[in-house]
Length: 81
Image (cartoon, rainbow, N blue to C red; front, side, top):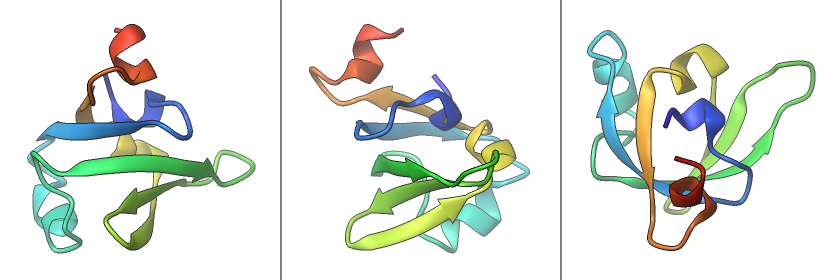
């Protein structure tokens, strides 16, 4: 599933990132095998707010579509596949 589709409050492991976004995301610590949690969505179609360790990051929805994730065991992300 894409990060853009992950429900708020659910953690998931990044499994792949579109090559065109990899360098910029890697500089922010967003890379395959990292666990992220969706904390919130900005209003009016704004960015997704994710937690990566102790950091909170805003990710544009178009970029979140380019990030594929797999839910951690027992999370809703697994059930929605």
